[in-house]
Image (cartoon, rainbow, N blue to C red; front, side, top):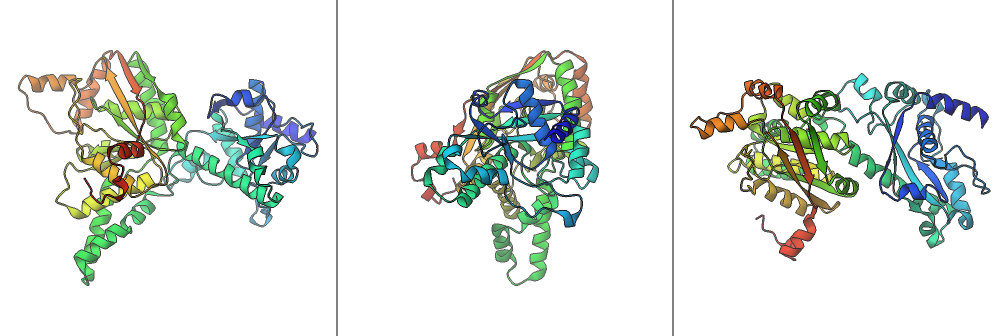
Amino acid sequence: MANINIFNGFLKAFIRAEAEFEYDNIPELLKGEFIFALSNDSSTNLAAVDKICKKMGFIRPSNRRAISPIKRNYFQLREPKQLLPWARSKRKHSDDLYEISRYPDISKKLKIIPVDVYWGKGAESQDNLMKKLFSESWEGTSIIKRYLRLLINGRQVKVRFLNTLEMEDIFEDRESPEKILLKTERLLRGRFRKNKQAILGLDVSHRRNWIKTLVNSKEINKYIESEAGSNKRKAMLLNRRAIKYAEEICSDVSYTVVGSLYDAALSWFWNNRYEELKFIGLEKVKNLAVDNSLIFTPCHRSHVDYLALSYILYKNDLMLPQIAAGINLNLPILGRILRNGGAFFMRRSFSENRLYSIVFFEHLKKLLIRGNSIEFFPEGARSRSGKLLPPRPGLLSMLIRSFKSRTEKPVKFIPVSINYEKVLEGNSYLSELMGGKKRKERISDIFRVASDFSGFLGNAYLQFGDPIDLKDFLDAQNPDWENNDSQN
């Protein structure tokens, strides 16, 4: 034990951690009778948790328990990957958790507090080893990766304490220790997985795989078969067209680009050109993020709207939303940056292109099924005058249809009000009011708008409104909506 404490002390010298709590009452629970559950068997994660508990005056994982036979104040769910393939551990379950399951009279008084550790700012979806090596991701990590990550990201660590698991409820069914063990592990893994998705977003291995599964969906294949019949050449051409549409639509999130953009460029922008980017109501969004698919519906006054909302979510460790953007913004350079930041592109009208409509709808449905956050502007265009425009129902209708085809996760709409003391595009709008023609977006517009950056822009304000549960709303409008085949 002394050697372990010395080693943990050495690791903690490289760590600077912050604590986050899923619910406000967790700090009080950390003063009672509990045991920590860590998501994996990692000495670096354990050192981070131990350091933050010492800093905040909580009982530490390294403290030995007075209760016998449960000696340790924590358990870990998974074994680490070993350095050599033939040295991998074959043990599948935690011995400490098994000991807990064997002694119900003692253990049922315990609360299990799941705690997870995040190193850096998120997963990188590109095929680049150096980018993947040090960022938090869905991939398992080897011992070597963990220690390298400690050196690279040890000063940017978040320790997140999740909602408690009551052992008294688990022991209620009086099952065997083996079943108690499996049941507890299953519940904990589910909580860790939902929390990780709420922070990192989808577990997407590569954009190509996403497009491949999208194009191979049942509805797209059904359309191709109905159009091509036995004509294999026509079927092949339609399949290629579907792939082309999917590549045009889908985002290509890169956390390297996101980190560079948000941590550097946008931090400078909001802190130097604006007095402050103020926001209220985000806590209720955080509380919903784990168990709900969130659809953000901000008003649209400026191209800066994309950046303001995503910046706030990113800085507060919430999943970056997939952002619906008009195809007119898919410009050279700019389009790539927006796509890397989570934008997916849509044409202004595709009612006469049946295949494109199906591909886009399947993409939207797949995002909801996977639990991704989505952002779209109900107005469909920027007002630039500061006034709200009448909503356009097209994308909203498709989202409701997508929701009807899946029921795994509740969907909450989050209204967002975005206001500026000065709208960046105000000069071009003033020119139009004086008789000038509205121009299509061009790459040169970036530099034209950037000329306003030299001036002081005042304050910007984001207000997150009360969430709207989509199922509750549809039930109130039409209790029989689930059995209604209409697509209106």
